[in-house]
Image 1 (cartoon, rainbow, N blue to C red):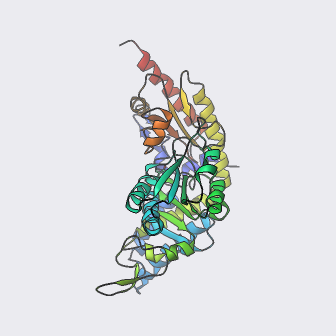
Image 2: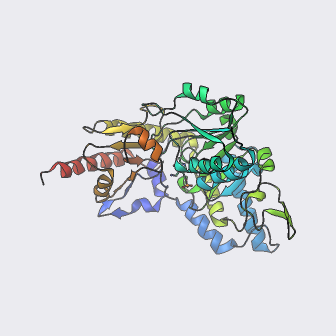
Image 3: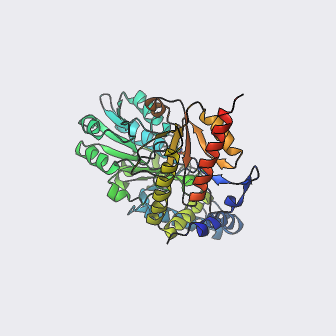
Length: 408
Ligand code: PMP
């Protein structure tokens, strides 16, 4: 049995009060809180092992290197990657996708080629491709989002074709909560001879992920959204692709031999890890995936599926509310708008009651246009949230409404 109260005890920040009320943290799609197991791993690393990795032969350097490489193995196993050489540590999803757009895109895209994305992409899976398209003459095409927040897969079948070189898709939308059929998109991409990139920023923290069964070629995620520290994330790629790709950042560590005029590259994944990496953070991410693994991602998913459905149902009962995204097959992200209330004002009023949600375009301006809004409010749940917290949200929304509807 999933014991959410036991889980909560691992997260000291959840004991905080905000404005005299217990903190109700519902901004997990922006970043998650960290369990003691991760916090302690970070402080133990700095107390006992801190050194730069790979270069040194002294004891601490060996220990730090061992812990860092162990973390790589843990993260690779967590996403079902058979070979840890395919796992590159980055600063997060944004850097991972930029890495692909530079190191793969600039080398492989030509005029007339197409990159197929969706209307629901986060800016981090859009802007890097706009830059790559500008530099190479490739064209971007977009799978439409249907009114229910799912992808128009019929359109996808027509859009993905002989000109397609890469299909990129957000696995779980940070606005709509939709879980997209990336396996099917990967099949379509491969039938067309293209590659498949999955933005896993909102899936790796919440769903069991297996890159092999997803059938993707690239998978990007951020540590800070999955209980890990900020400043670290990863790109997984099929090792053969990494071998063929050009480097992204140049500098120390990523080289084999450097001459004044030219250099040769280190083996993968080190070819893509230039300079001193976020060592402690990567080790902290290793502790985070250990923690997630100990709960079991199936159980995490089930808890969030139940709680997400509960939140969707409770919010749907709020008079006049617009909910975005599908009612079924969704994560614990619920975006909404109330008539006559700007989402920023709403989130400020909720903050006065200790309820933390987010408002804005959520780095998805094209999707906002598709939905016909400039912004939404968004509550996003995680493995430590409870039904009581959903109730606190719904009650705080009711009080905010009274405030806005009161005669001036
Ligand atoms: N993609 C999605 C779907 C996201 O939700 C986010 C973070 N909001 C990102 C990419 C970017 O992640 P990061 O800022 O950690 O690079």
